[in-house]
Length: 234
Image (cartoon, rainbow, N blue to C red; front, side):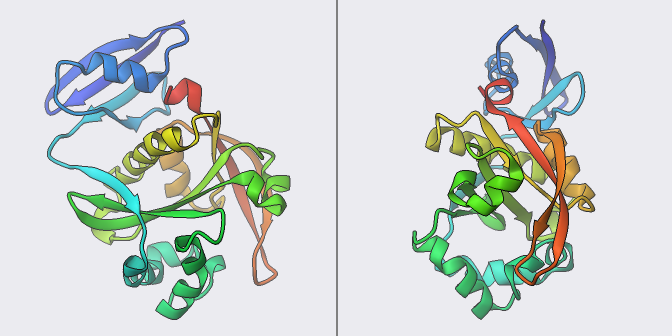
């Protein structure tokens, strides 16, 4: 069974299909061979899988360093981020350094990345093997998956489709780092509709809801969202 795939390039639309057994991302790359640039996902939530190529906006991920922590502290303090990241502690620089410094130093299984648009830092991603956190693996039900959390820090980039694009960029990087991984997993708060919408557009499927214990003794009801790497990315 084939799946319709569209790749947008400026005012052009290149149409084709993902053949039986062909990943949507690989089909988009094949369809877009006549244009400069690699396609990224725009909306994979419908029957028609929509990608785009935009050579004027270059989005990349790079390893986070301690020099990025003032930006992370500022992003974590922003209203649109603070509500969903409260469990990581206070957003002041000292607390952020204490929370994330061990990740940056390689003393935990978590790795952190800065999202850049045309060289400007605009957000961050953290990822980990779920089985490296047994208490979470029991809840998530996907111990062999690669988990991620993410935030667009700069308010100017909210609502512009960057969430889906940064997820797609992370897919490509993570596919190379963990070639054996067949599933990516995220679990946003059930009230975080913007994150759930971005995950759906990036190709994730909603699964089980579960209560995740917080560091302060509270619980948050989150939605387990899984991505089939072979089908979506290839």
